[in-house]
Length: 329
Image (cartoon, rainbow, N blue to C red; front, side, top):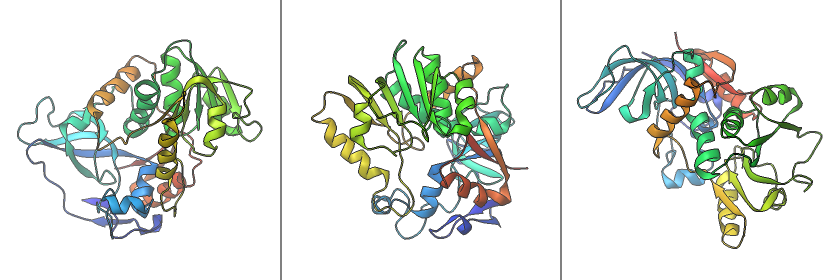
């Protein structure tokens, strides 16, 4: 099969299209014929082995990538199922977490897949897993957003942010989205009652107070973020950081958790999504919102499989509008 592989840590150019053996479905496993795969910040972190401290933990590999096959989100059709797999059969259309999804075929476990909503194209469905699950955890699980609360989403025009705005609005919150000028109308159309252009206004100036802030960017100091919270508000941190950092976002998250020990406000982080955590229930929750018409993936760009490196570079630059997706013929 054709697949995007990486034999060493490095920039997007390290990714290469190559012929490789098609995986087989073992016991409890599912082989998926990939039709589309989303691009995530996760992908360039894995590609670069960034932050470097992650190499020491074994999360990305020590001297070379832990996984030779790139990609994690996918949508496609079940090609084969292994022994002990229930509820899935060849031909079923699915979405979920499939390590090595930048390929014609990817192997995963049944608990990391759910049926694809019929209303979605494969490109839209591929955009769902990591972005929507992270948003769901940030808004509902960690932020515990309730109807009537004032919620601010920093990075509202990005892959996680576009989902987060919709989920918070679906829960009945009054949502403020922070984004660039080109995304203002998009974020408003997703359900934000208020939109702040970060190039013209600083939401941490203390003029507005929020019950919950989901920070997807990490471009504001913790002191400023706390100033924008109510006295008992909740800050939920999701990533931030850039290539080449020794600790990257992990350092800021550790500082946040240390301050939380002494703070009246609740300072929280989103735990990693796939492949760790109760992702099957989360995937079912987001697809239920999609089927109810409360959640719609935003796909900004698509790339051919051979151009996956270009897509990773676009996402790494940090200005993606919604999700970028690789299509697999």
